[in-house]
Image 1 (tube, one colour):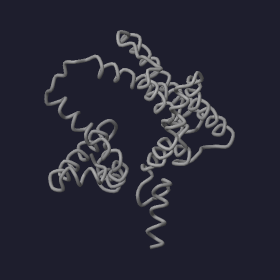
Image 2 (spheres, one colour; image 1 turned 120 degrees about the horizontal axis):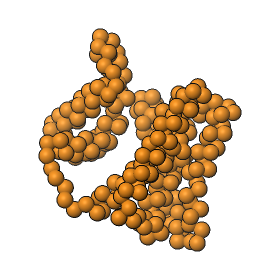
Image 3 (spheres, rainbow, N blue to C red; image 1 turned 60 degrees about the vertical axis):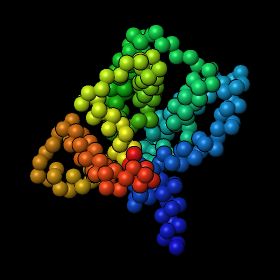
Length: 240
């Protein structure tokens, strides 16, 4: 009983090596859900724009700490909602009508996308040269946050404005990947560990072919799970 409770506590605090540290998002969801009433009040107030400062300030603090004291180890730096707050807040502001995305400015957002991509590339190189590999490849950088926001806006425009969607074998495959993306996210580290101890010992599969291999194995594996266990069971397991 004690062992079970320990596992549950470590799981919901994202410290469990058994359940995998990919589950850190659970505690973030809980925090944001609890804060929804206060976030709603902020959005409806005249100070609603201040909400967009939460994530930049938290990233700035992360930078200062990292430069002076070293790396904040995962998952602790990702457990606090503030670093992800801007995505949640942006969605609520769009839904509430505080922000309106101009659907006829595709070229502008595409230019911003290119700029954000270059910024992310440059910042990654700077952190790598500084000797901090974790920050170089991490998601919680100013450039990565900016890049993700621009990408989300482009997706939003495409979903809202585009009416004609053409289906073929390639698009259908990407739809399957999207449907299984949660399962891929939760299990890819375990699969990578297995491949490192088996296939990669005999065959050196370089990027991006190793990524393609992992996705194919994941899609095939989850497809078999859906077929033999059913969608309902797979949804409970978090695979789809």
